[in-house]
Length: 323
DNA sequence: AAGGACCCCAACCGCCCGTGC
DNA sequence: AGCACGGGCGGTTGGGGTCCT
Image (tube, rainbow, N blue to C red; front, side, top):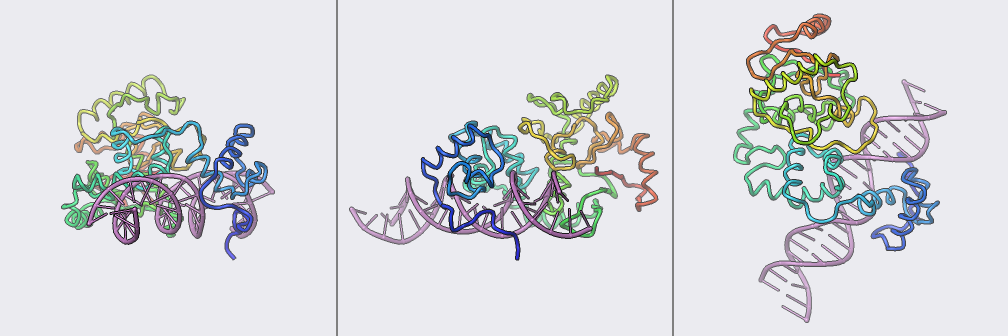
C-alpha cells in the first residue's frame, strides 16, 4: 500500500552527516555531477538515502552557497516575494543567489516573522495586524464579489484557472491584489501564480528585466517594443504598485511550459497581463492600469467575442484569459 | 555550577508533480 | 489513460547550542 520507500531504511544512516560522508558525497559529485540521486549513495559508497544526499548537497555542500547572516536587503526581498508568492520557498530562493529554500524557510520562521510582527504586520497576510479582523471581513464583502475564478475542473486539486472575470474593476492596488490572492486557495490553484502580478509593475528596476534577458518573444517588432515602452511609462505615472518582480532571474534552468516557474519567467512587457493572463499578442494595449481606461484592445475584443458564447459576460465587466 | 527554557537550523517525512513507458 | 519512478517541495522534528534563573 502506498509508495515504496525511496531506500531501504534498515541499511541507511540517519541524522547528522559526518565529515567523511560529506567528503565522499562531494568527491562523487565533483566527478560525476548531480543527478540520479537514488543510485548515487550506492555508487558513492554512502549508507544514505538518495534524498538525504540530495538535501545535504543542496542545502549545505554546494560550493555556490552564500554563508553568513542575511542582509537587510535580502530581508526586504524575502518579505516582498513572500507577500506575492506565499510559502513558495524554492521560488523565493531562486531569486536570492546563494540561498537555499530551506535556509530561507528557517530564516522566515525564526526571524522575519517576528520582525514583521514587531512592525505590526501580519506575516501571513502582510497587512497591519490591527486591521486583520476588519480587513478579513471587508475582503469577504469587497474582493470576493468583484472577481470570479473559473477553473477547468471542479476538483480543487486539479483546477487550473482559465478565466478571471471582474464585475467592476480589477484590483487597483497591492493591498487588493494581496487580499484577492489570500482568498484564493493558493495551494490548490498553484497555476494561478501571483508572481504574474508583475504585469502591474511597469516600474523599471536596475536589474535586467526578463525581456532584456532574451526571454521575450522573438517575433516582437520594434514598433511593438516602442508601444510597450510607452505603455510602461504611462503606467508608471499612473500607479504606485511596485512589485519589482524583475529582481534577479532564476538560475538557468528549463521548465515545462506551463509550470509556475516557467510563467514566472514569461515576458512582463504587455500591459494585458493580468494575474498571469499572458495574452498571445505582444504589445496588446487593452489595459492601462490607471483605474480610468478599462478598455480592451481590438484584438482582445475579438478574442472575447469568440469566448463570449461560453461565458456570462457582464456588460460592465472585464474578461481576462489565463493561459 | 546546574538545569530548565528557549532558539536555531540541519535533516527527515510525506506528498505532489513531471516524465517515460 | 494509468502506472511507476525520480526529483522536488513544504511542513515538521529533534538535537545541539545559548540564555536565563
